[in-house]
Length: 508
Image (cartoon, one colour):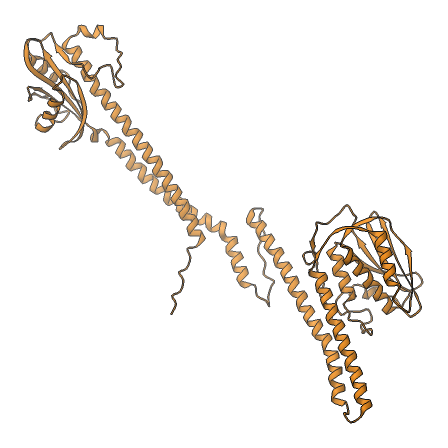
């Protein structure tokens, strides 16, 4: 048994996760940069404090040196260079100087001081403001070793007290072979406690901000995605039997524009489905009559009577011919409604002359070209010729034999006009709105040889050209069918899908 595919993560969750991920990365970068900058500032400040010990010891050992020092040096951390050594002159012994220095330069909080002579810690502060480093033999041994070349040494070491930033200053006295070292250390971890506390506060605030972004983002993304959710629900509700659901188009944003576009698409789909249903209903209705006629005559036919059999055969062939014409007209209508029109400049004078040549062969009528327009329209010449000839054929079917039929063309400010004028029984005004429907006629009865699709084909071609066909009365009796085409200035893009602009009316 196949395992069901896992349900995809909803778009709302993915969008919110992306927002939170970006916010989290941004807060982490800001916090990290801030911490590193503040940490570097603390370390630089500690280094300045340690460097100040060298100047203080020099001044304490020889006050006259302070006047000669202009306060400038090549050292990036202070006025003291790494090779300087404190030379004691105003004190009797090295012990007296170191004891006095330890007592004078009282360590601040988070600081420790010790004076070492020949590697042995001798003096430490008597105050409790700092911490004691005199018992850390490893630290003292390292500091003494690093200052063995009589150079002031700065460094960092990890001890039981924590990470210590220290400075070890060699101290010498003329006439005393002993080596003294003044050591001042600062607890970096303790100095960084305010920064660490601030970062802890920042992390708590960042978590609160992320939670707020998550809550607000959840509702905002839900509101933004609600039209899409409605679109999905509407799509689920649409079926072949019910194409009426539509989307809400409130607003002026992109989602509203998309909703309007989808509604327009649904309108076109519903119109196409209605047209197809109507076509199927009409074709089914039209096929019933010839099938019933053929079946009835076959059932009543006497096979032993040659005359009856011949009569039934003629009736059957005639009905089959009508069915063939019906199928051919349906194919023409489908082509007119769904074909691509090759739009171009059509010479009205040449088109009128061509129609006059073609209709002249239609028998039993007197055909006349009474007007020819000089001008150019935008359209598909083959389709316009087809529509005009269809009107002429329709006039020939409904006009008494021998009566004249006129055709003509004209151009004015409203566009081009192509007409066919007959002198038959005319069309009642009440019936003119429905004669362009499929299988519909003004009389409601079938004319011999017609399928009822001719005017529907004309209507489809005209709508493919953004034009129309209207029916008016002929002076003295009859009907005039006029094709109206828009002005040449209102050219349509080529090619144009007739089905995209066709708005079919269904039979009531």
